[in-house]
Length: 81
Figure 1 (cartoon, rainbow, N blue to C red):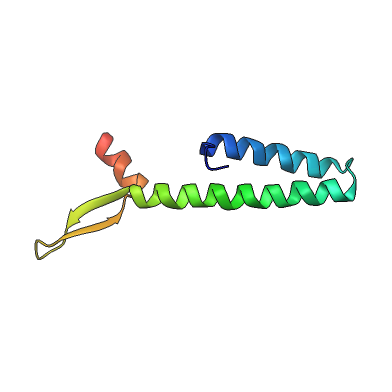
Figure 2: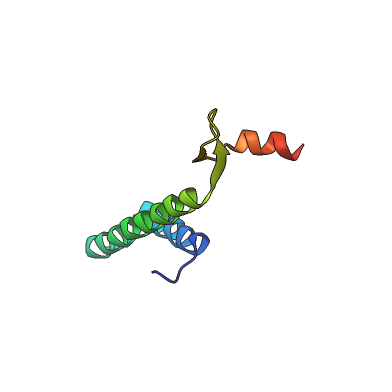
């Protein structure tokens, strides 16, 4: 699973959920799909958390000390305009 991109993992997760929602598979197979789905959820969440850590904004506080804070998308949009 480590080699999957976020998009690939999310696509597999969507397919897994649709298969489970269909309800046309035996219980044992449904459990396997559920377990795979949970692994995909954790994998996607981990990728998102790592991406969030990478998207940080370096700023300077009132005393001139550099600090890192989350990059606000609304702030980024204002800077682009």
